[in-house]
Structure formats: structure tokens, C-alpha cells
Image (cartoon, rainbow, N blue to C red; front, side):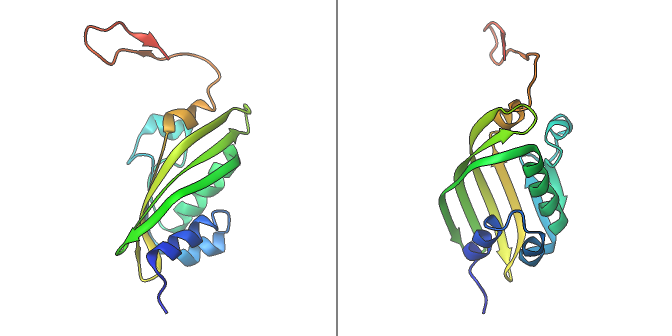
Length: 153
């Protein structure tokens, strides 16, 4: 009996460190978009970012995330579906393993499920905050408005 797309996504979220479950829940040609379509600078900080394909992309992403951070909290605030589409909204708190910096960020996921398999997964978070959990120094000089003085971040 076919399961609802919401149930498939719930199963994946409960199995982020279980490679066999991920292989069972993700289609062989599934697309995974993490934070952006492709940003070479962000990929240097968070190597799993960008667009990748297949169950191994999910396995690699989740294993690397937990290699870089300890999860202190993961809270799903809303999860709902319409047809093949599923939306998830929540927040998480991670502590970077290298520096011990703690960051809390909202996240959202857009997933598409067909025939009990995830075929598309787009994950968004505050990548500025999560990347900053590895920051050891330096500053950006920012000018985001014409006629307004620049500032350091």
C-alpha cells in the first residue's frame, strides 16, 4: 500500500544517519539541492552545498553535517503536504566540533515524492549563521546601499 508523501518525508527526517533507510526512501535519480544551486565559496566552507543526485548525495550530506557539528536540537514546527509536494519548517541548533560555536537557525525543506520515493529535496537554512560557526577571524567590508557608509561584519 502506498504511503503518503508526508509519511515518506517524516521517515527520512527520522533516519538521517541510517544509510539503508535513505537508500530505501530516496529515488536513484533524486535531486538534492542544499542551500544553493552552486556556490564555490560556500562549498569550501560547507562542502555538501550545491546540487547533487541520488541516495548517496543524501547519505554524504547528512554524514558530513554530523561530522562538522553536534546536533543540540532539531525541531519540526510545521510539516504538511499537497499532492506530491511536502513542506517542512523548523529550527535546529548545532555546535561546531572544531570551535564549539553554537548556532540556531530556521530551516525549510521542499520535497517531492513519487511512488513512495523522494525525487526532489531542497534544503534551506541561514547559511551565513552556520558558516559563521567555523569563523576564526577576519571581516567582510559591506556596502549594501548606495550613499551609505560601508561596515564590517
